[in-house]
Length: 278
Image (cartoon, rainbow, N blue to C red):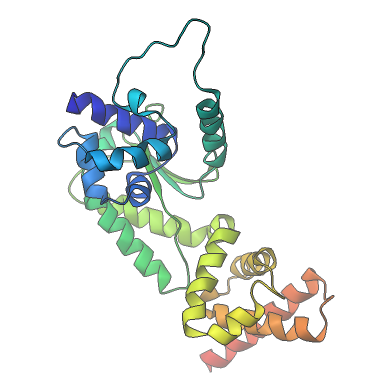
C-alpha cells in the first residue's frame, strides 16, 4: 500500500464528509496527531481500525485501499453506499463554525499547533458562558492566497487579507476566531450547544436542571431565550438563573407565550446585573 496515496485518499474522504481532523479522529478513537500522520503519508492505521474508518467515511475497504475489483456486467456501485454518501453530505452541508483559508496560509495548519490555540480560545470563551462549537478547519483555493474567513452556516462572520505571515499569524487568526464567536454567538448558538451547556450545568445543579429541562423548558425555547438575551447584551454565564426563572414562571402558568417569557427573563437578568454593579 502506498502511504502517500492512502494519506491523500483519507484526507479527501474526510473533507468530502465535511469533517475536521479532530472530529474524524474522535470518531475513530485515535489522536488528531495520529490521523494527521496518516494524511501526510508518514504512517498507516492499524488493520483493526480499518472497519471503523470505512464505516465512518461510508466507503468500502476495497475503495479505501485502492483495490480494483470489477463489478459484473450491468452491476453498478452499491446503492446503499451511494445513499449513505448523500445523507452524509446533507447532514454536513451547514456547519456552525468554519475557519477557511487560502493557499498561502495552509502551512500554518499543517501541524497540530493551531489546535492548541483553538482550545485556548474555547477555554477563554467558556469563562463567559460561551461554548464554542467544533471548528471545521479547511483550505479553499477560490480564496485569495493570503485571505482567511470565519464562517457560520455559510454566513461570513469575519474575513481578512493578511499583509504578512510570520510565527504569530496562527495566534492572530485564532484570536480573530474567538472574537468572531463572541460577537456573533446569537447566530452560532443552536439547540445542540444548548443541550451540551445544560448537560454540563446539571453536574453542579442536578435538581434544577433535571427537573426543568427538557421537561417544562424545551431546548428550542431555551435557545430562543438565550439568543434574545445575547442580542440585548446580557451574559449567558447565568444560565442556571435563566432556567430557574423560566421554570418558576412555567410552573405557575404553563401557557405563558414565548414573547412574555423573554420579557420576564430579560427584566430579571437586567435587575441581577444592576445589583452586581452596586
